Image 1 (tube, helix red, strand yellow):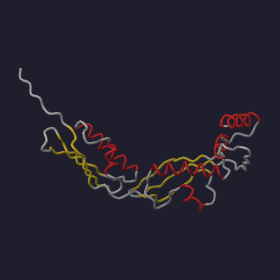
Image 2 (tube, one colour):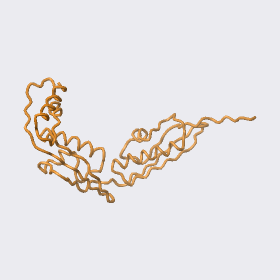
Image 3 (tube, rainbow, N blue to C red):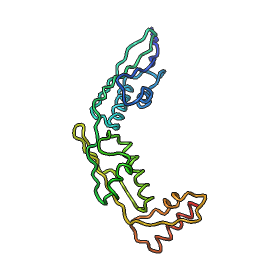
Image 4 (cartoon, rainbow, N blue to C red):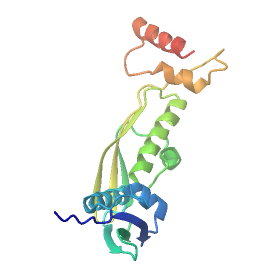
Length: 212
């Protein structure tokens, strides 16, 4: 019996080219690759798919990611070369709101954190919606709910469709809550569209007491 021992294949280093929107470090972290990892062609395909999806979430729908490898002078050591062609960014062409209109149209950009002309960054849109909900509650719309209904893409243009439910506007006076921040008390109220019946008010009181 003759046994031939082959050197274990490892990733010597990772080279990323063509990436302007994200850094080399972010690209490698997204792919889940680092120098010293075992070299696995199937894993490289998964890394390529993850980086592609990451770019698309940032608004680069037509991104093209290729992964090439080459051997080094050291047996078993492979260089992983990632070539990125980002392509044009998809930009927000329109923002449509279904349901209750947001108060004061002029506040939309400041409230949402994104507007027409911005690159369609899905994570930024989601963060903006969460921040807008908080801002609406601070304005007295304690049952405010915002969500993304859909994103319609057409070439390099996208329409973001939002659902808005503001509910009633309340003036909330909070006294004697220190050291608990007022925002936590208001959040604990968790008002909905339900009428303020005795059981609903009792539940609200219990939530505030639990927070304190």
